[in-house]
Length: 310
Image (cartoon, rainbow, N blue to C red; front, top):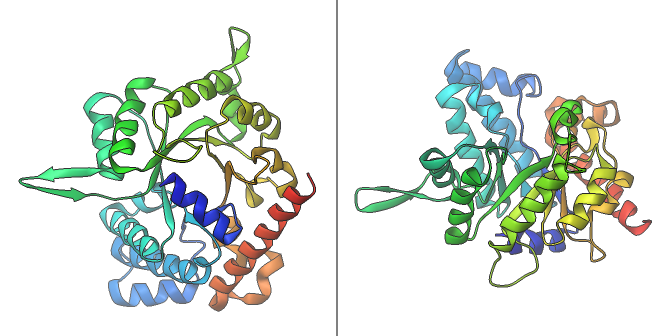
């Protein structure tokens, strides 16, 4: 799957992943009203609204980008109906031939980690049959319980030819409380980068230069990103924090290798809620998906310019 992601990045010329992180405040009123008319002001109504909202965005942008990243918490808040909407979103995106990164940030040990890996990336046995659960192409994983929490995922990745993105240096302001702490003269995030590189060396596809084990490094920490790109040369980096979170194309060029590969940049509300921004307000809520498409094009041009001028 890492090679499919790379191929699609090259085809679209857009190292971009759209974060499908729906919140009810982003959903246009006419979509909510239609969903509530059918299901009432219920969890089912909310789930229908976010599903229809997602579908509109995917229809508008699927030809421009290689991947999407639904954040499962935005769906879990609506309970079981929300998880149904999550699964419908995953399936629909795969129908559109988008690579799906499940932003689930799982991290546990033993049989629990195995169950997470199977549920999101693998297949579960039911009697004599095997079934895929959520069936994403990649999943985000929290590594801070150690190798016990990662090995079940790398096992499934090798079996299914799928991938993970391991949290190394996250984009949130307080990440440094732990991730920047010095251990043996180096910050913890650098130690984690070395560990990700080691896990990746044991989890390589049959062809290609990048492993099934990727890393998450926030756009808001460009200097750390420079260091980590060198620590993890065969690791594809997922970079959250573009746009609404403060990152710009000029801050991100160093995440990429000379061939323009090695990283994929995430934007969530900067794209999916573009119509609520001043720059795209003229589209109005009826044309929210067109505003999202325009935001993707602007982001693609920003990153291309940054890579050209580095």
